[in-house]
Length: 394
Image (tube, rainbow, N blue to C red; front, side):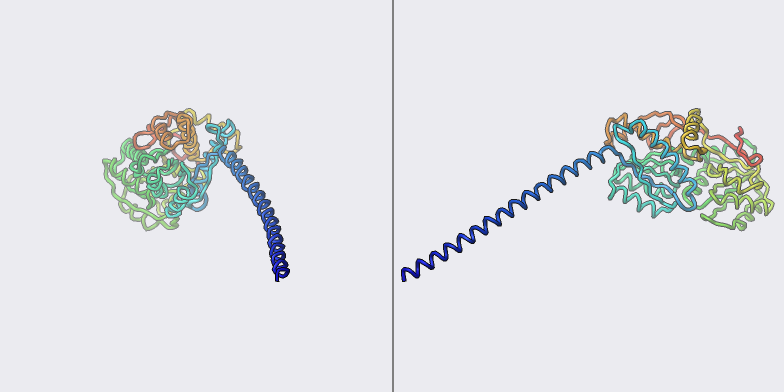
């Protein structure tokens, strides 16, 4: 019995020792695994720090613009100005040691699409600044999102007067249509004309100019007709206008311009035409041919520094300066100056500097009033002569 018990105890002891040996081996495996995992974690931390340092050298800005569709001409022109500004800044080292990177999204001049993009920029990309180089409709649609999320928004194309009340975080470098409508009313009065017809695109841009013109004009508006985007037949509205016998037409149109002018000529409608700044487009005039002869267009006056901007642009790109590009160029540059003055990328500090800034840019002196509106931007008048725009005085 004793011998048997001793043997049993010995067997148990051997099993224990074997188990202990296995445990030691397992502990070694666990220890080695832990060391490997630790090295992996440390490596990941180092990699993340390196990536963070790389990312820290770049300051990203979201851009909403119509890069395709009916307003692509304007969106691509704005993009040319934005890209040129960024290139000039980055060659000199960027802003506060960071290179500027623009992240583009195509709105296609669609309000809902623009809103979706702005929400993405704010909620997903976490951008502090968004440049909206878009039409009045999309610009007005996204402004409340920027304001609610305290994201700085700089508009460089949308000129609707309603943006005036968008909030503290919304600025724009392009003049309000209030000023444009007032200039149109002044031209009509200076020409000694009285009976006016309004023909405008039915969106925030067209309606904005139409409403402001009605406020500023003291003569008689004998006809007021609108048309939808990408319309092809304007004869019904034009016949109504002709029957009203106006002396002058205020025309607010974009790429529809050539067709409108040709159909006016076809219907033998002869009157003075004063077009919005969107009608001062060499490509559209070329498409319109002789039907455009004599048309007047208002456009933002060229500042003295515009020549300098134009020369640099042509030298760098080998291309002519696109219409509207200078306002987008100034949008980037005035932001960069505000960041430099702020000495940081803090949104609140940059915003304060924007309200106090006075920057000499491609469009002249850029400064903002208490509503974020660019101040003191005069207009020039152009007349189509022999297929070309010639600046005149009225």
